[in-house]
Length: 108
Length: 114
Image (cartoon, rainbow over all chains, first blue to last red; front, side, top):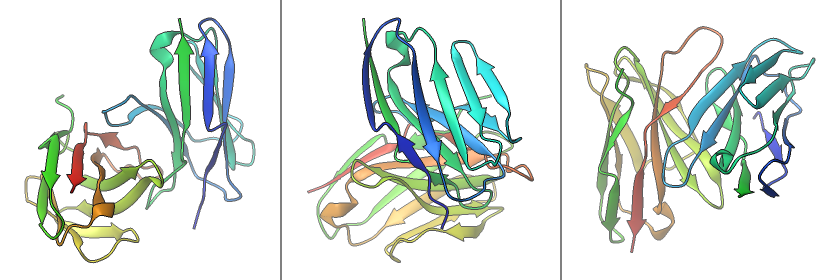
């Protein structure tokens, strides 16, 4: 069973701060996805990383896939209240495995 | 394209009853997966249907079942409801590319079992 561990579990910051959340596994993944989920809604796909060492940017969000394809990180620059939500990483070609998520609150 | 739709959005049932949830995938997506999300366990995979056939199954009891119709719409059924079945049930469709499995989620059905 492939497991994904996310850290930190909770993060509460002020608007304008930078932050990084991590997604780690002992298994190799062919790809990893990052999702953001807002309360009462389903997760929304943000990005898929496929190649080891790959970096993808989505406005103020930067996603990185580890060289060994066992870990990934999400960095948010100058966080805004609209970034508040649960950030989930997921991987697995056949049965998607989801991490438990990082719950982010950005205070105005 | 319209997104994934799920009905109903909210349900309240009592122990022992059964429930059927419905999901309409994004047009063109033939893969539909179901997940259970709870604060304690996070997002857990229930099963995946592709072209009306169950292709993958998670570690849930047989009380949880599903089916997919020829138009890719899917239903999930839970029989003999237990208090622990209270959760957000999410449906996701996927274009199912070769190398990765991007999931496009619906808003979910919030099931409360009393």
